[in-house]
Image (tube, rainbow, N blue to C red):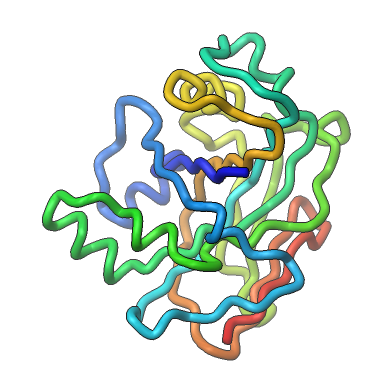
Length: 203
């Protein structure tokens, strides 16, 4: 299982971080060790003082494929969940300033909590899907897939040019505005629509 993610896929999030709007999807990866089960807490590493939450719709690939055309991409997944792309923003800023890869800021241990439950895509309108994140019962992020720059099918098609997608791979599809720092003792809750899908305690 591998984790492939898209950065800068929501315009408001691009603006809040003062990033440039990309001409094509920005791809980064997280190793398998970044995966965090929904029943496990998230421990803030001792080498960072600024870990941010980024809630995202997550797609689970259902069979192998490469060089997938956009019109066929819908055949490569049949359910979606939700996850958090934890990002060490202080380290990421240092790496970006030097023109270096973000791997350590994005792919550290436990940086990708994912819901245990996934919802069949046939039960959802993936072109108009609300999702959100609360910190200590206060809503911090709220997004809708209609605001994506690149749709789920376009993301899958683009990624498959470079990576063989395999059954069980997880695709993080980008985060809306509202990212922010997490602190020890915080409780994060993630929702698809009104349904709570993921809860993470920060230690």
